[in-house]
Image (cartoon, rainbow, N blue to C red; front, side, top):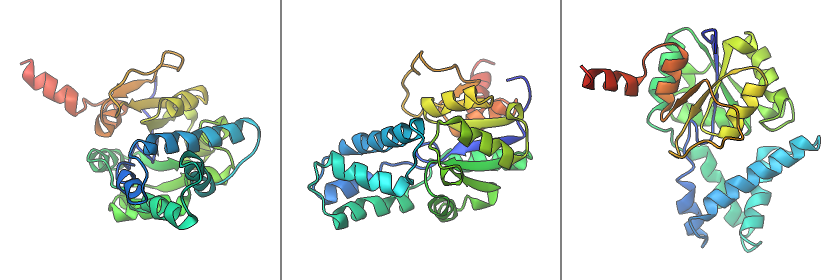
Length: 234
């Protein structure tokens, strides 16, 4: 990263909003808690496969089909709906508000860049009272390709109105960061899982454990962890 970004695109699911509450919904329809990771991985896999082959289906359909598959077809449409409607009620991670507020107040144009539907994302932002800090929701529905297809990042750059070098993508997913890097964007990886990034992916410009610190470092400021370390080392 050689230039300070003026536009920041932030991934939505897991980067801003936690999927954890869906575990209880899975349990309510008789499914094991570990099915959450299997389901979400299946959704992403199917979206990636369609993008790689030139096809597309919206997130809602992929999510429903994936849930039917990983539950071995035992869930009724109504039970799957019980689980999936929870997506519209996901909570924001605690570091999201300070991160978006810092980006917004620093003059950055903030985009919520999602593989999901724009309406769902907008509702999540409003429910968490974050919408005032987000300039625009950008959905893959607009280009009919799932991230990490390069078309998605190129579209985000056009929407944001800056060059790729002045546009940053921040995400908790290594594959998302890798895709943005190869599209020419600056990148920040939020390591929520506290696990090393695979060496098959491009090294991000910024690696942190929190979204607020990622934003601060992309802005060239010390993040919360750096500030704490500075105090402790005095």
